[in-house]
Length: 98
Image 1: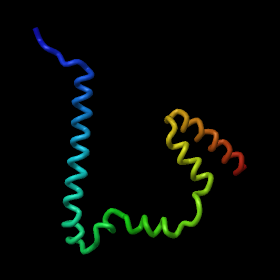
Image 2 (image 1 turned 180 degrees about the horizontal axis):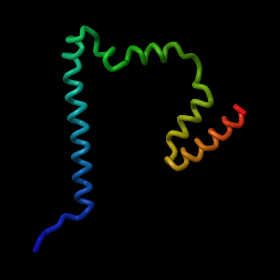
Image 3 (image 1 turned 90 degrees about the vertical axis):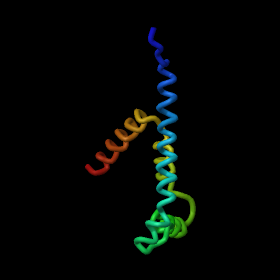
Image 4 (image 1 turned 60 degrees about the horizontal axis):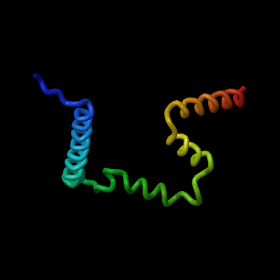
């Protein structure tokens, strides 16, 4: 008689494998950053964009605009609700252009 793994065990194994691959790839990239930065004569911060991010955030003043806050909230919704909101926005913008 053949022993079969339950579907949940296979999914669990796939999840653990995906987590392992993600961790290894981040670790390898992090380990290679100093060498890469030195090879192209730049800093690690420039490679990963921290300097640009810091400069961008330092130039902003005050809270984020309301529309930006709303869009961030929409991006957290399920895809179906995002599509519905996008349709409403598209039709409203089309009416404004007409």
